[in-house]
Length: 317
Image 1: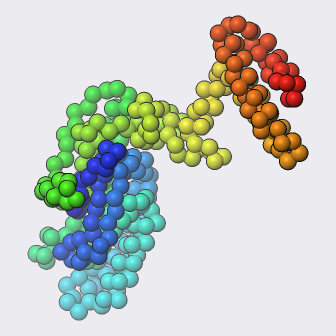
Image 2: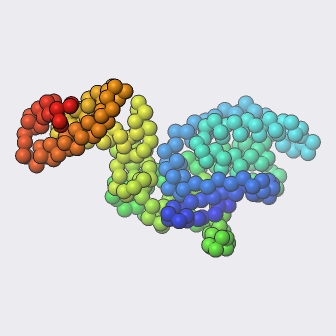
């Protein structure tokens, strides 16, 4: 697989894959993705990879092995049968694998899929040019688990002995006044290790969410502990983490409860009272001042709660 390694104006490192091979003329198709995002997609979908392998094993027994026995050495094997098997393989990839791994895997192994799916290596000398998707998928899963182990140790502060993957070919192209690094990853199963290599080399932060347990690339601070993925009831892990933190802080908890009550009351009054929005903003400003007083010990928690319940500005709340 050939990739272009690029960096945009914001310093984001990305991989771009171009659909081009000996067997498939360049169709202009390309997929670009942030390196850190690609690594987290790989790390967070180990269960999908396992399901994909099991589905491939089932289809192999039901379709591909029989086809190999009947037509593998037949130069007149029906194209309609090859197309049927290719369609099955495509469906397997796009039903079970996450984006863009489904695209990578299908474009890498869809050529002569009847040969690829066979457990037995054909004696045909040309077959050594091919790689077999089922063994490769198993090896890919094995490498993914290695990367998960390494990344888990990294986020816990441990040092790892990482032996990076070196692409089989590296070249440079001058495009749009910039040098672009072009790499060839000869074996698809080395993609996880290459992504991890780029992450380590370029010091890209990859953390593990303390809510859902998935790996993620922090969006602002490198020490973020919650991701932006939706977790429950439409809320992200970051939102849930913030709520947990607030609930541990009685002062903030009291403020948030009062805030929600006042905000709901404001929304009910909007149509009838033109000053409802301004009144609410004024209350928020005063409430934040009282919150700071409470944190500083100038007023007690009970006094702060009483103000939230009874306090008002200009007598309008």
